[in-house]
Amino acid sequence: MTTLRDAAMTSKAWPFEEARAVLKRYEKAPPEKGYVLFETGYGPSGLPHIGTFGEVLRTTMIRRAFQIISDIPTRLICFSDDMDGMRKVPGNVPNQDMLREHLQKPLTRVPDPFGEFESFGHHNNAMLRRFLDTFGFDYEFYSATDYYASGQFDEILLRAAERYDALMKVMLASLRDERRETYSIFLPIHPETGRVLYVPIKHVDAQAGTVTFDDETGREWTLPVTGGQCKLQWKPDFGARWAALGVDFEMYGKDHSTNTPIYDAICEILGMPAPHHFTYELFLDETGQKISKSSGNGISIDEWLSYASTESLSYFMYLKPKTAKRLYFDVIPKAVDEYHQQLRAYPDQTPEQQLANPVWHIHGGEVPVSTMVVPFAMLLNLVSVSAAEDKDRLWGFINRYAPDASPEGNPDLDQAAGFAIRYFNDFVKPTRVFRLPDAREAAAMAELSACLGDAARARDILARKAALEGAEVGDVTIDWQSDDFLQSLVFAVGKLHGFEPLRDWFSALYEVLLGASQGPRFGGFIALYGIDETRALIARGLKGELGA
Image (cartoon, rainbow, N blue to C red; front, side):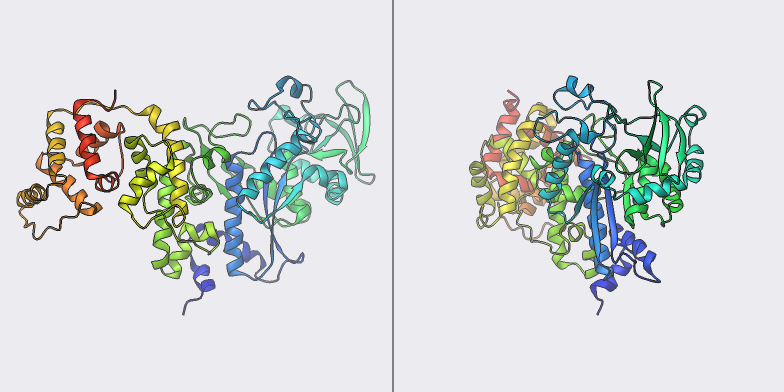
C-alpha cells in the first residue's frame, strides 16, 4: 500500500516539489541548528496587503508538505524590515503632513499616524500579525529593529565589516557608475536626527567594528556597526539575514528575482549557504498594474473577507503561483465555487490525487466536507431576481430547492448567502445592463416560458429536438426540480429556434433576464428560483420591465 509519505515524495503539486528541494539540502546530515527554517519577509512601509498574506500562506503550504516527507523539526518566521527608513509617505494613511516631517527615519521611530501604537512600524507590524492570526498561521514574528538594537545581528555585522571589500565588490558590480561613487553596504543612523543616512563611508575599521563618514552638513562621525547604530542596505541586508538566522527557505516576488545572485553571494561571503528560494509571479490590479502597499491598489485582506471566506482566498493563492494573476473583486465568485468543487471531489480521490488537490494544502490534510449545495454564482443571480436584502429571503428559495438544507446544517452556505447579498449590492447591481430581446430571442423565451410547468409541451419540445438530430427521445421523466431536466429543456428550446452556437442563446437569457453578459447554469437557476417565478421573470423581460 502506498503511504502518504510515498505519495508525497512523487507528488507533482508545487508545495511538495519545493519541499523536496529543501529536504535535499540535508541528504547527508541534519541541520546543526536542529530544525529547518522557513522565512518570509515584510516591508512595513505601508499597511499589509494581500500579497504579503499570500507569501506567508504559500510558505506555510511548503512547510506542511516538508513535514510530510521529513521528520526534521521546522520553524516559520515572519521578519519585518521595520528599521528601514521611510522613503515616502503612503497615500492611504492619515496625518500626511506629520509623516513628512519624519521622512528617512526608521519606521519604528516614525510616529503612528493612527495614534494607536508606539510607532508607524509597530502599527503596521500589528496589522500584519492580526491578518495572519485570522488564518491561524503557526509563525514567529521577528523585528529588524529588535534584532539590530539587541545585538543579535552584531556577529554578522562585525563579519560584514571584516569582509567589507568582498561584499562591496559584489554590490558595486551591480550598480551604475554614479551610484558606485557614494555606495556603501552600511547605512549609519544619525545620532542626532535619527535619520537613516545614505552617505559615502570614508573608512571601515574592521578591528574596531566602526565606520567613519560625513553627514549632510559635512560633520564627521565614527559609529560602531553594532547595537543598532548602523543598518545594512536592503540587498546586503537580505543576504546577511539569511546568514545570521540560518534560513533554509524563502520565497519572494518576481521583482526580486534579478537580485537572487546578489542575495546568495552576500550570504555565502558571510559564511553560510544560501537558502532554497522560490520566485512567484506578481499580483495585478484591475488595470493590470502591480499591487503595492504604498498605493493601496488591488484588494486588501479585509476587503476579500467582506465578500467571501478565508478558504476561498487561500484557494486563489494556491493556484499557479508562477503565473501573474489579476487580483480584483471579480475573481471572488469563481474562487468560492471552485474551492467547493474541490472539496466535493476530495473524498473520492486517490491519495495521489488528494495531495494534488488544493484543499489538502489549504487545510493541512484535515479537509472538511462542503455543505455548499448552491453555488455562489447562483446565489448572486438569486439575489438579483429576488431583490433579497437579507438571508432569510434567500433561504426561502434555497429550502424549496434543497429541503434538507439549513443555516445550522449548512454553515458555509449560510455564510455565503450573506456574502452574496453584500457582493451583489456592491459590484453586480451597479453594473447591470438589461436589454430587450430581438424577435428570435423573444419567440424562444416565450416558448421556454410556455413549456415550464406544462409536461406535455415539454415532452413535445424534447421530442422535436431529438428528431432534428436524428435521435429518439425515449422515455422522459418530468422533474421540475431537476437541474438536468430543466437544462435539457432550455437547451432544446434554443436548438429548435436556430441558435448556433447555443452560447448565443444562453447569453441572450443572461442579458435580457439578469442584466449580465454571463450567468449560471440556467436549468439550475430555474430549479432554485422556481417555475412560476421564472415564468414571471421572462414575462417582465419580454416587456422590458427589468431595466426600469
